[in-house]
Image (cartoon, rainbow, N blue to C red; front, side, top):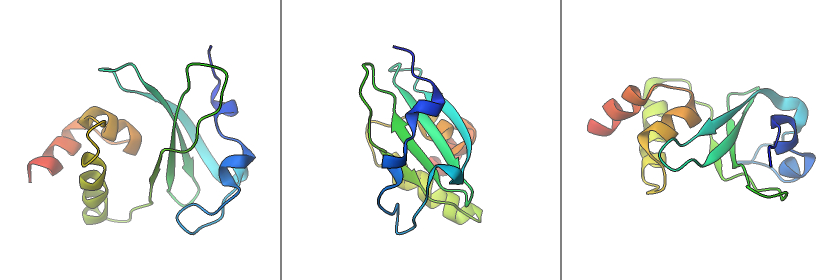
Length: 115
């Protein structure tokens, strides 16, 4: 089934605070699909007004999924690099996937991981 971006995030996703902050659907400033090319898994990415990004897997059936990753807003390179390193601890995430989730290049992720 082809799920549209608008149907991926619902009011229920924002019923409880995310990382201690309360949001609602009106806080979303951009939406996009992210795909892991090696596995074919698709994720929906919602960027919120404060720079926080919410990542949800796109289910293959009719059901809804829950927010799987919360990428906090970052204000400098050191904060960004720490988020990359934290995400890289997840064995299910590739460098390409981390790059897509954070809206940065895969080479940036690779450079951070090498250091």
